[in-house]
Image (cartoon, rainbow, N blue to C red):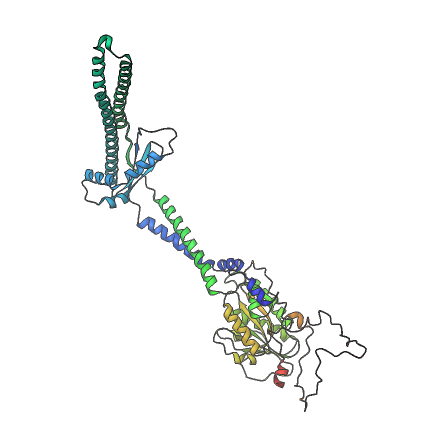
Length: 532
């Protein structure tokens, strides 16, 4: 798979990197969560909830049935929260408040198919109780009046139908009397039809009378049953409960806001935190890592780890004389201490000196205890077998042309999540232009759960496994020849011999180019640079 295909296959958002970035920004979302907790507690103490009164109303439905799913009660709740009911309650309270505003202070809730709970807020306890009583009375009066009107309308309709049937029965009775007066000349078939019609109308009239009476009886039952079963009372208010509830809500909202902000900033800032990302963007392998130094406890353990990493870096650089540099990116104090540890390790084998070009670092104070000499850049030339370690910075604003005087090779000390991807690419390009190969990268403050591979497999000239077979440095540049040798051009398609056979092609193994450098970072030795 080519690098272009790898770039296309990479996801838009790396979830592992996102999780690690959010976890590294725990100070942000913990701070927002604590701010939300404090804000919720302050709201509960400074803005207490107003007094609340509760009442329960028993509502009798004429058309109630066991199969009802709460539709009738939802209708009653909707009627309770109308401007008509609110206006009637305000009239009872002699208040000039608008019904629309008054609707915001109370609400209804259907507990069962026949029990309605009313919750009302007020400025004082007495006002809340008075509002609850007024709203309950207004609702009951409206409900009973609505049912009475419906029953009266139904009764009137039944009575009208009864009267219509009675009016139709009167001429039929007259026809029957007239036909019976004929005596023997009466038509039996006509009388039979009249008798049948009279019986039908008499039955209808009797049915309409019964239904009208039932409609009138239903209204008193609804009026007597619909009443306040639980008088308005003030809900008990617990300051601790309210404080805990508001603080918990504030904590949850602050935590969610902090996590969201941390996730957004980690995507927008695009700062690599994983080992594989740092090595890929810098074009060098991660050869060591150091945790963030503690402020108070376990300092001796941190010093031991740093000295161990310094010994690893000493074995990584060349053992002959020369210069190497440690370039800092976000961890100046650790870089200075690491350079001093390396110098002390190398001082046992020969003369060593440090070149201090790292701003805001106490390099001279750290090296004052040992036998390591600290110089400024360009003080004295390097002796024959003297090892020189240059300490500098690759933060934004670095003078790239001065890095050549700190060392022919370099080790980068990079703090995870400090620089963005664009700046890491800039560092890699500038070092390549200055012909300074990167031995490796030391990651400072990595994520403890980061187990990604920080080794580059396509940069053998910068990887440690490619330095074992590297040729030793030459002390003098090669002599230039007067003229270049004439090289016979190689034919891409050799001609056939007379016997019809082609020239034999030598066999070439697949791994003959395994140790060849990549095109991205082509190694250039300082001697070749001087020859050019």
